[in-house]
Picture 1 (cartoon, one colour):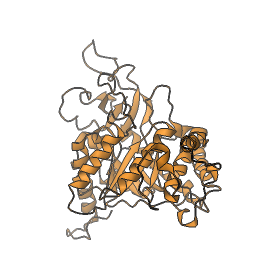
Picture 2 (cartoon, rainbow, N blue to C red):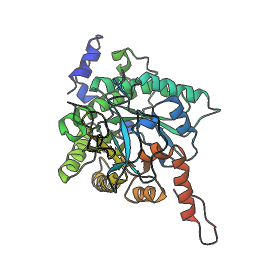
Picture 3 (cartoon, rainbow, N blue to C red):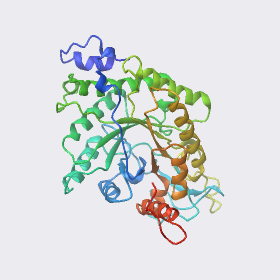
Length: 398
C-alpha cells in the first residue's frame, strides 16, 4: 500500500523502512478542524473554475469558504463539445435552458435540476494555487474565510497536491484545506474510488502518510522536490463522497475510515471532513423540440451524466443524516465534520441540511442558475425566519 510513497523517499536515498508505522505523537492524534462561518459555501462545480469565479465567491459576505472546481496536477483534457451541463425541470424531465456550450440566458425558473457529463477542470492545480495567492495578495489583512482546493488523480498526484497546498499555506492570508474528490461518476474506466473499500483505503493511507510526514518533520518535501517550509502546522483534508444508496455502502465507508485510524492514532481518524454528496450518475435528459430533436440526448455523446439540484436533495439529506449518525457511533470518527451538498437553493433547504447534521452547507446547481447572489438570498431567508411578527430578531441564525 505504501510502496509508491516509499519509493519516492528511496529514490532520493532516504531510508524509510517502516513507513506504515510513522510515529505520530500524541499532539497529532486528532486532525486539524475546519470551522466555516458563515457555514455556507459553494461546492466544487463548473461555476468555480476561473479567477473571476473564485474572486466573486471569496468576496461574497454570505460565504464562509470557497471551493475550487476539482483539479488535477496536470489538468483535465476538457472538450467543450463533449463535456457539458444543462438544466432541466424535475417535474417534467424537460430541459429548461441551453447546454453549457452555447450562449444563453439564465435557465427557466422551474429548471431547478442539472445534468452534466463533465470531468474535471481543464486548469492545472498550480493555476488554482496561483489564483489563491493573487486573491490573498489583494487582501488588506488576514481572513478567516477558507479556501478549499478540490483535487483528484492518482495516489501519487494527491500526495503532490497536499505538499503544494501545505507550502502555499505559509504564503497566504486565509486558511487552506484540501478536498479529495473520490466520487465523480463521469470518468470512463475509472469508477469512483469511494465506492470501493480497497481503493478508498489506499487514498486514505497515502493522505495520512503525507500529512503525518510533513507535520512530523520527515522528508516528504524532498521526496517530490517540493520546497516545504518547516513547522508542525497541517492542512485539514477531507473526502468528497458519491451518493450512497444502501446500508452496505455506508458501512464500507465508516469501516474504512475507522481502519485508517488504527493503530496509528490513539482515537481519531485523520480525516477532518466529508463532503456529501456528489452528483448521481447514470442519469439522462432528452430533448423535446422539433421532430428532428425529440428523443435525442440533451448532452453530447450518450448524454448520460450526473444529476444534481432539486431531485438530488432527499438523497443528499439521507446521506448526511446517515453518515452523521454512523460517524457519531465511533470514537475514531465522531470528530469528522460533514459538508452537506445536494439540491440546496434557499433558506429552507439550508436549514434541512443543518438539521440532519451538516456543519456547513454547499451549493452547486443553484449557483449555476442564480449566480453568486444565491448565497445572499439564503442568508436573507434565514434572517426573515429569525424575525418575529414585529420584524424584530437577533439576526441570522446560522
